[in-house]
Amino acid sequence: MPEEVLFKSEHASTRSEAAAYLRTLADKLEADGVVQLSTGGDSLDMTIPERFEFEVKAERETSKSGGTPELSLELEFEWKEGAEHEEGAGTLTIG
Image 1: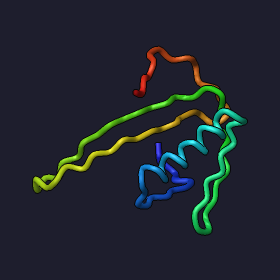
Image 2: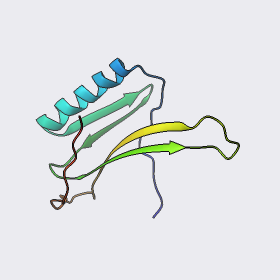
Image 3: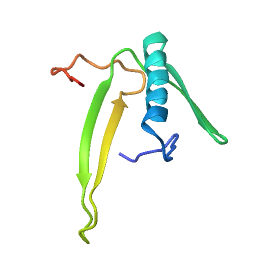
Image 4: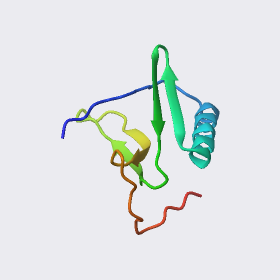
């Protein structure tokens, strides 16, 4: 299935700045799920449903040339348009 990028933002950040973004997102999730993303001239409003697939992934990428590995922590919310997600098995703990 082809992927259509609706919005993308990537920039250098401090932990404190990233924490502020996540706090704002958490507040929006707890309220009504309506999130407005904007940067420069681009903006997108999304309504995140009450239930969705929540993926947390930690990765290490190593280049073929043997350079310094790149680490990443990815958080992804995924749902089908117009549908609520079924309850899943498993519980995530972040400590």
